[in-house]
Length: 251
Image (cartoon, rainbow, N blue to C red):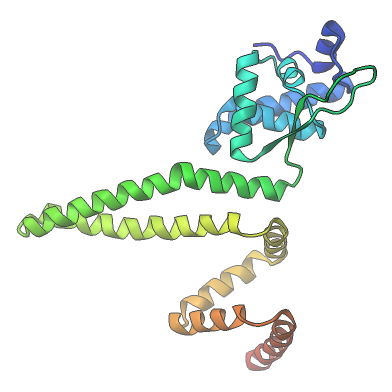
């Protein structure tokens, strides 16, 4: 499979892909590396390559331009673009007007420009494709083990398996719920939350986790629930008041 730069391809085929060959070589190297990593993310390599290339081009491209740049067949490029649309990381748009070209605009594809938005879509899609089916299998298996254990109470191995499955299912559900919250956040909310977390030193985060471990769970849940019901202005006042109280108590 060729990865010849799109600028060279355009010269040979009369295409309209623009850009310097130096920039194109860098784009293609990133696209190929992105494709190799795609399998680890649960994304087919061709889809990941198409996504990375469209991101770095930062402009709508036709299916022909994409396949010529990445050295894909018409079928492979069409399938990759369609699948990328399903993942929500690529959008179908009107083909930009080309100089000297007549007739209605064709179809082009563009990477979703908001990184936080496509990240949330990928998380949601992976949860649907991977997380939900795993939970369904575990629930069915745990139910079967529970029924068998009830029918054979003297089977210690079966009892142990039932208990392990029940515990593991709780863990998977908790993890799945945490993952499922990401797509429900607005992109700017997710960005701000992670950016603020990035400004907090690791030592502070670890101290907070250790502190929470020593508090009553009911008190923590009540506090979080009460804070979530405040208006923005009331929350600002409460935050300032709480900061002052904490500093006083900590002295």
